[in-house]
Length: 353
Image (cartoon, rainbow, N blue to C red; front, side, top):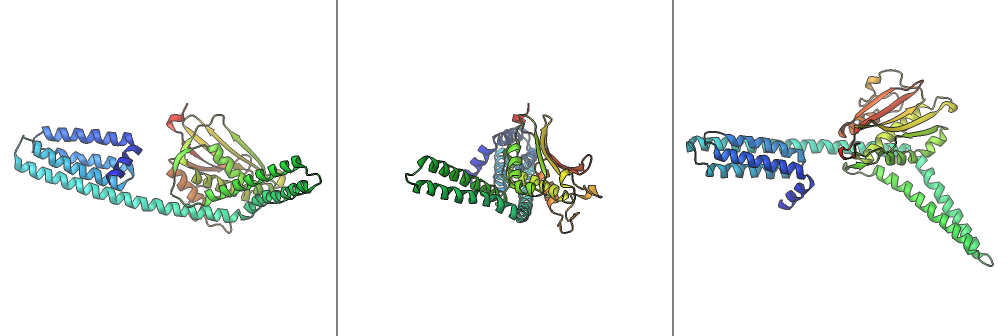
């Protein structure tokens, strides 16, 4: 347990420095004041702050530490009547123990809720990938077909009399490039469907958007859609889970493509953009589809759908993902027709200009 606590401290040094300073101040104040004053009750605030670490064991260690400090302070205090002092110390220890227990229980419930949300998001990603199975197969089959063709070409050049090593080398270089391209497609799919806990880190949204659009490239071509991207210069990073943010964008793009099925192919346009105002980043997906006929305020509710075979979970999960990142999600009519779906995320403090 001590080793884990040391690891927690190194992960969030400012939080634990604040906890240590506050606990020390309470200990000093509790020691110099009279025994009649239940100053140790203030350790409850230390425990509540430690909950921000998201580590139940760390909270328990803090609670035990506060109890020890309370007992030591009582033994060191020389002022006041000892009998009320014992009662006050006992009440303080009781309050500390109850707060620690409730904090751990609440954190455990929240952890289970996060796990359930992650499982639901994973299910949604798998469903999306099932819908994209044809597109993914096409993306993989292209480099595989090219590998076979270039391999045969290399064999022909090598079996010629005399062997043409230069042409064979060029064909083999193409094989390597096509193999890398196939590996990239498979890697993108594996990352998207992997079931893992959310991993919050610095994320380059241009990379996330680009990788998502590569997965949808065949669907865009097949539906004769003009795809455009607009990215602001020098976009800073945001803090988030790369796969979950990719899932949100992928869901927006799929909905946009489906919304343009009944539109004249010459009018099908899809615009994916990312911009910033210095405090937050906005990512939006605009289409020229039929739009949403009614109940726009309900579009992010669970099980609400405008599709005949839809489940109504994609946008609801997207909203939960964005809100878990501290952002906001929105939908609005696009001018002159279609819809725009997007979300905003706060920028990293260290990358703001």
